[in-house]
Length: 96
Image 1 (cartoon, rainbow, N blue to C red):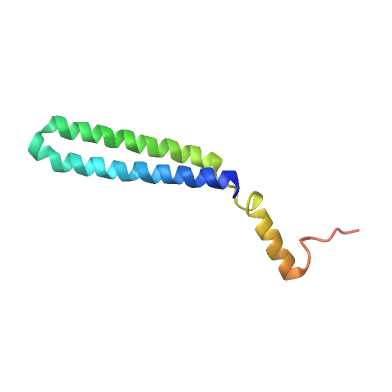
Image 2 (cartoon, rainbow, N blue to C red):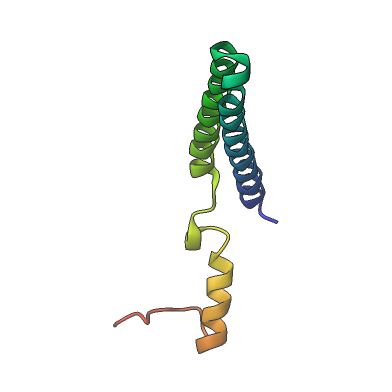
């Protein structure tokens, strides 16, 4: 497997974990606010905010790591499909 694809998958997993934490912390703040007061709710909202910032940061990192479509890992797949369809990987013939 291409190392860029592996890093992309790891970073997407990290982003999803941070988003789940964000939702969990926010839900905990809503549920705990009436019972334990503003301080505990504020603490969980703060953690939710930092989890969201973490998701954004790792999403930005993933933007620069992820494969670039046909210009990277998919180029071989596209070339193989073109060769199977036409018998050649050349898309244009040179004009003379």
